[in-house]
Image (cartoon, rainbow, N blue to C red; front, side):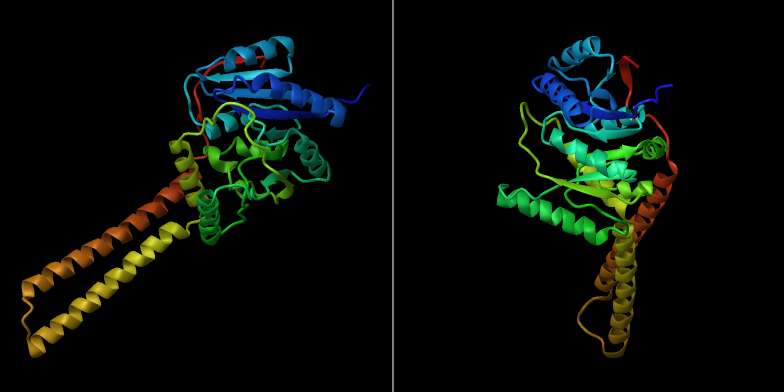
Length: 314
């Protein structure tokens, strides 16, 4: 009996990518034919309610090729949610998180697969620094990574934005997580050691990025709280320290006032002390609240990331 060929799932989130749909399909088919002919494939498109003809073009591909699958969401739930929902619904022996804009080169996929063949359950594509970026972008990127790296209490991959190959065992673990940002920057939560492949990020082939400011902010904050508890603990420790210093200052001032007197009215001292104490308590309580939120977050492992309108070829 002929042995079943292993299948590679390519997960492709989309939003207003009408000019890239056919080219990315052609590029992926060519790549499989030339470099990975021994593998079966499936392309899982996950569209976030595009406003252009993206969905119509994906539907056309689904009619041509039954290995092309589609999930259409009822509205835009954000790139991360859409991508991870599609990943959860992939059926390959491994899955590759991919972008439809050609910024992640198709010819890097065989390198990821080769690392997977060597026994790595998790292979991360890491961008080489783009020296052509403006100084402001370079500074912002450097500041972001330095801050996250300083606060992180687990493995953190710089210049990694979700271009990942996951073995089916790792995909099974992703299905247990409620948060979609498990794939962005904090893949170490899956427990596997990452293997790395370095690549040069290309310019977007066509169209404009669908990432909203709110999406980027969500990724930043989710990454910050998921890679470390240090941020909220620093706030709690700072609040406690300020409260202790305020109480010491109040005690010293009271002793000086009672012993040698002075022109500073006692009621002003009381007001300033109260402001300092209550301000410190607020920082302390916010830090403790953050600890509770982090604790609850780790327990919420399941739930819907998106609401789907329909599926094709599943």
